[in-house]
Length: 295
Ligand SMILES: C[S@@+](CC[C@H](N)C(=O)[O-])C[C@H]1O[C@@H](n2cnc3c(N)ncnc32)[C@H](O)[C@@H]1O
Picture (cartoon, rainbow, N blue to C red):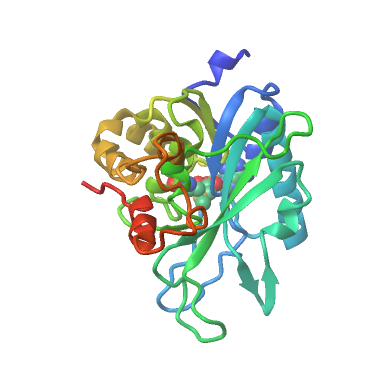
C-alpha cells in the first residue's frame, strides 16, 4: 500500500496493529482521545458508564499503560519531525489510587510541550470523596528535529487562547464518549495555521477530528475498531457542511487585533515591564493587548 491508499479514509482495526503497518514520518499532526480504561463500572446514579460497541475498556492498568506507550511511540514514528500530537485524557481515581496520564506519557519518545486543562464545566460524578472533577487534560506532544526540542512559536492569536480551554462536552452525538468539535479545531488550526497537511486520529470514534480536519481543508486518516462508529463517522464526513458553523464559532476566537511583532514594529506597547515612566495608561494598554473581536 502507498500513502494515498490511507488518506481520507477510516481504517477498521486495532490502533496499535494498524499504526505498525503505516510508513515513517508522513503525518503532520494528530489529535485523539483514547479509551480511558474506566473499567465500565457504574459510577453513580447520575452518570452513565461508557461502553464501546467494538472493544472492552476494562484492562489491567499496567497492560493498558503499556499499550498506550506503544501506540504513542508508533504515532511518533509516523509523524514528521516538528510535528505535534494532542492527546486528550484525564486524571482517574480508582479505588483510592490516583492515575495520572503523565505516568505513561513520560515513558514515550514524545517531548511533552504542554498540559492543557479542558474545563468541561460539569462534574463526572457528584460524590464528595474528592472535590468535583470538572476538567480533563489535553497533552501537546512534540516531535523535535534532531535535538532542537523547543521548536517553533505559536502565532499570538492562537497562544492567547491560554492553557485553560473552556467548552462543555458534546451532547448531540450518539457515540458514548465524543469530544466537541471545538477541541480538534483548536488543536489543528493553532498548529497548522495556514499550512495544509495530513491529520491522524487513531481512535477516531464518531470522526470528530476527521470532520474538523476536512472542514479546515486538510487530509486525514482515522483508525477505529468499531464498524458501527465508522459508519457513523463516514456519514458525518459526507455531511460535513452541517458542522461548518461550529467550526467558524471556534475560529472566531482565534483573533487578536495586533500581534506582538506588529506592535514592536510600530514602536507601540509590547509588554508590562518595558515602560517604567509611563504608568498612568499601563492598565489600559495591558487590557488592549487582550482585546479579541468576538463578532
Ligand atoms: C473516547 S472514544 C473517541 C471518540 C472520538 N474522539 C469522537 O469524538 O467521537 C475512543 C474510541 O476508541 C475506540 N477503540 C477502543 N479500542 C480501540 C482499539 N484497540 N483500536 C482502535 N479503536 C479503539 C472506541 O470504539 C471509541 O470509539
